[in-house]
View 1 (cartoon, rainbow, N blue to C red):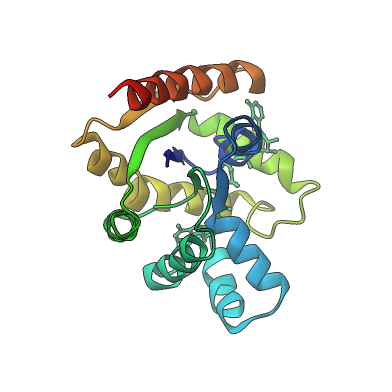
View 2: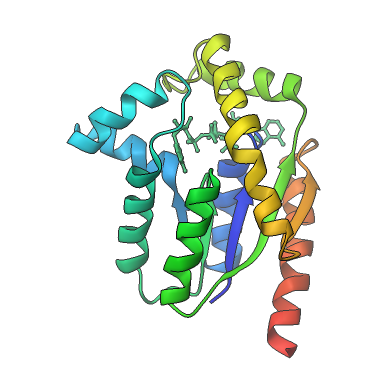
Length: 197
Ligand code: AP5
């Protein structure tokens, strides 16, 4: 299996790039944001609980998202690899993910971190909020709260993977194609090492 974490702040392009990467590398896309929005749309108890946090731009409790990922890993036994988008977002989530992958005798190959300036993030998210219908995109206060949560709780997760030499930073500003090519370059290099070692 070849497993990737696509990492970066809200609006850095994780969802956009994931769509193209899963097609090219035939990976299973696991986005905790998408899974949570689906729970909200279906008005499940989990979705109702999560919405309170998401509407304020706060992270949903670890046990909720770890449970969702655990189920998703169990229900996809035959895939070539996973692309994690928006997960893990805390050290506790990273440690839980490592344990879950160990049970499947696999691990994270690389964390690809998209670097984008705060001004550009806010511009992108406000712009998307004009049409997306996402309640966490419509005002700048909530967007800033999401970025604040990222800086305080999520950014340190990169240090966790850096200890194992697994983090690669990619410039997340530029055209979608340019960024996609940079991501593919890093994946191809790692996949090649995986094959020959
Ligand atoms: P989630 O759904 O994960 O959202 P996010 O991380 O805030 O990220 P976005 O989806 O807003 O941005 P993105 O990086 O995917 O960028 P995108 O490609 O969409 O999480 C939402 C909430 O759920 C969280 O706040 C939290 O409450 C909860 N949650 C989720 N996971 C959790 C977890 N693990 N633990 C706890 N809570 C969790 O692009 C954004 C915009 O920019 C788009 O309009 C796009 O078209 C545009 N764009 C993309 N690339 C470019 C480019 N190169 N140039 C110009 N524009 C671009």
